[in-house]
Length: 172
Image 1: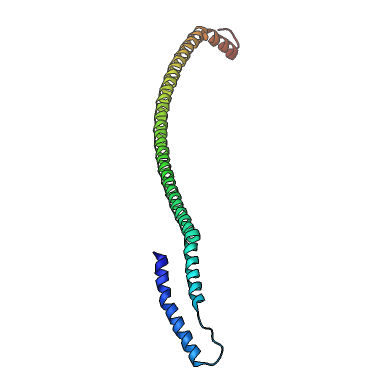
Image 2: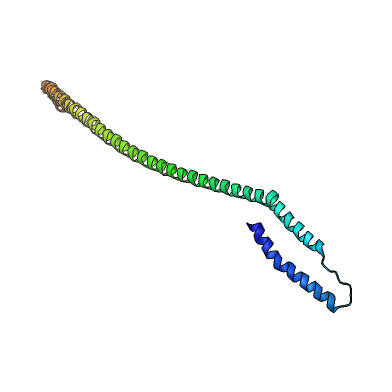
């Protein structure tokens, strides 16, 4: 279709060239080139070459360019899909990391609470043991004090006599 459109566009140009060359020949006395039948053959040859080039070169090149454009469009769509998949995967990873951190914090809080409870139990046990030991120590000290008092009471007469004898210089 394009070819015949080009051919129709050349027809008025050929007619105008023929008329102008005849007028130039009639008005001047110099060398003039008259178009003869070879010009029409050259024009037909030119149009035929354009038609052959269109079939042999231009159409395959256009087809290759169309295929390349389709391939590039397909690759761009693949890139976009891959990019969207990567974005979705990244957001799912971020969500997973966020959930894992939340679980980790909950677990950590639970461990801290258990450790505090265990610490309270241990401290209560230590405090009870210390209280028991202190009570036993007080009882022992009070018994020892009582024993020492009793022993001193028994020996007080001996000490009084010895001190009196030293002070007075004689036995009492």
